Image (cartoon, rainbow, N blue to C red; front, side):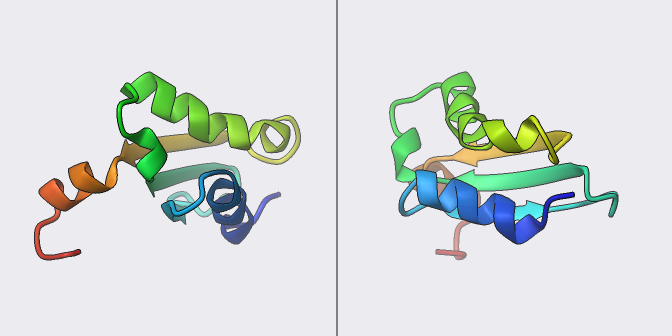
Length: 86
C-alpha cells in the first residue's frame, strides 16, 4: 500500500515547482486520482504530460500503486480554468 503523501512527494521531487493534489476516492489505497499543475508541461501535449507524471511513479506501479487517474495543466491553463484561485 502507498500513502497519498508519498505519491505527491515523488511527483513534486521530479517536477520541481509542481502543485500536486492526490486523492484516494475509493478509500482502498490502490486507486488514486491526481491533479498536477507544472511549468514543465508548457509546450507538451496531454499524452506527454501524463507520461512525465507516470514515469516518476514507475517503481511504485511495479509494487504498491495500482491505478492513477490524471488531470494535468500548465499554470496558465489552471489559472484560466480557475479564475480567482491564483
